[in-house]
Length: 106
Length: 121
Image 1 (spheres, each protein chain N blue to C red):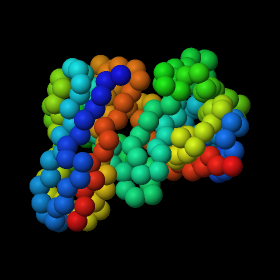
Image 2: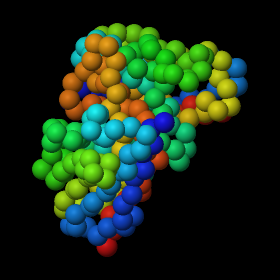
Image 3: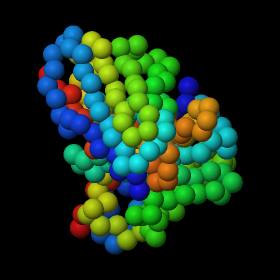
């Protein structure tokens, strides 16, 4: 299985901060990388697909970049509703695998 | 707008077979692939497998011997059966549609709200 490693596992930030989350794959996955946001008690929600494509309806303060084994999710100006856990997921090889998550806290 | 809604027993005893369903509305269940994903309490996400109305399925090797996924087009439902459950199968179970982009990138969107399953005697 492709192992996905996220860092940091958690971070503290303030409204208006720029936040960057990193996801590393154990082997090259080209751009087959997706990002999800999960608020407490809710289902995950797709933010970014194919490493850098913003899902319809997702605010433009979210962006993704990277290819191969290293990827980043950036929130340009953190808003109160962005405090959540973020997961990366690879779709290059079966089984699809997720990172362990990054919790963004106040 | 696509909507998914999982349903299940809530509480199940060890060694029993877990049965879950996912009702799909707003999209043709026969036009897509559909997945089950689970999340143990306080932990991350684990892909269980996918199913298609044609009978095409694929399972996580870690669960393959215990899992069956099927699609019922007459009810517009996705089903999951997991045999010989243990406490380690306690989790929130989600169904999700598999969508595609361009070169073949696959992603899960949307997800149902999830159904909580507890395995306990």
